[in-house]
Image (tube, rainbow, N blue to C red; front, side, top):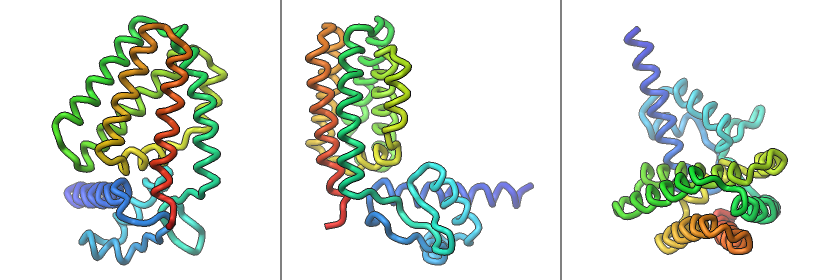
Length: 222
């Protein structure tokens, strides 16, 4: 039993270590993640490394190629343009619908999420944990906007388009100015919903996603 617990601990350690490096963008897109090198760097055997890479593959942050091993997930210029182009169309439309259909409880939850994100930023921490908190809150905010549109067809379409691994990494490359702009967009969206102004909500969501698109371009190979 003790050996099993130790193995679980080292597998979790390896997973968190590799994931934090990915989210900090310490490695370029497409870099090969060699089990032997990671084993030496982290100080664990290859077995927990293998398990960590398997988990990260399931999350979409790593891709495993038969007979070639694992490498960091990468996106081309075309991928980014296509993903964000579709997100702008769909999520902006969703924001417009949400402004008309959002419930009072959904409005309250959006304002609560805005405050939670602003609180994380106000603490002044700029570590992986804080970035992960912001990423999770941001994901919940966007999911709630889609829910507030009360359209099953739209929700299904957006689910097909959104790349969560890309979103996870996007928030982790934001600089301070971009983070503050994102917070301002979230707060303005919540205000637009409160005013039930569809045009305002669509405009802010569009600007918000276009800003994210520009930030992700920094992940592309120079």
